[in-house]
Amino acid sequence: MAEQTEIPFAVIDGQAMMQIPIDLYIPPDALEVFLDAFEGPLDLLLYLIRKQNLDILNVNVFEITSQYMEYIDLMHGMHLELAAEYLVMAAMLAEIKSRMLLPRSKEEELDDEGDPRAELIRRLQEYEQFKGAAENIAALPRVGRDVFLSDEMRPDYERPKLHPEVDLREILLAFKDVMSRAEMFGEHEVQRETLSTRQRMADILSTLQGKAFVPFITLFNAQEGRLGVIVTFLAIMELAKESLIDLVQSELFAPIHVKAKGE
Image (cartoon, rainbow, N blue to C red; front, side, top):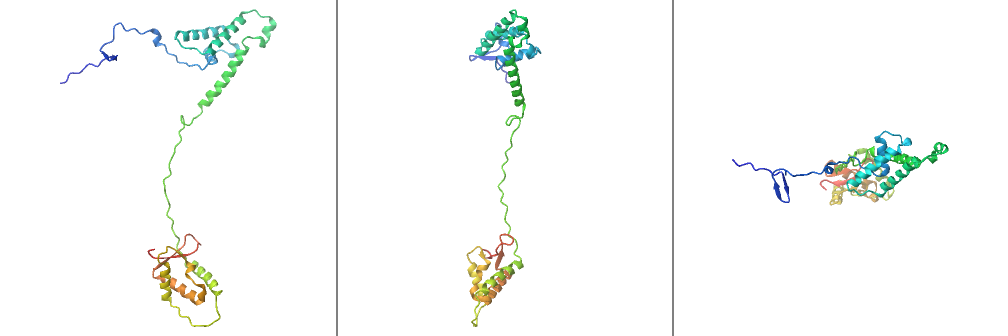
């Protein structure tokens, strides 16, 4: 059986460490963890006030200033660069604290505008209002974070278009229109006309050859008069009866078209 190799505890600079060094030293500062990140000095002050469940209108400047300075000292101890606004707020708190220590007359104590904390309280109230509004907006459902839009592609589908069956009544109506136009070319000269239904059937098939659809009315020659129109109509009916041609419409009540079988 193959011997089980010992896995090194760590690899430092390419050298495998098989056991923990006896003289290993971990500085205490390495275990410090910051759970809160502040967006500015007002955010830090508001955090300290909420932490102690204090009223913004009755802020204990002495206690808040002490905790604020402890945070500043902690940041210095961690060798972190502080923004200038944190130092400005520290100077402002020191000024308010020093002004609160000065004796005040009874008129100044009754006058709210003379309170050194007034400007700080106003700024804290505004910041708390806007921060609350921002938190409410952030809690709303957000596209890409809480709500994800679905995108579904519609499959390509083309519905086949079915041609309706041609009703005999519509054929008769179309024939009536042709007859009405044929009467306009009527002649009074009486002569013998030799028209063959079989010959007209052959003529119609020749006309339809190589064409997809031919309008029904174009197969009639109104100049031939009533007899020529009737012969053409009978030829068309005979071809349809023998299944040599199809009569189609693109939709209901649309013009009738004729096509040869197999075209």
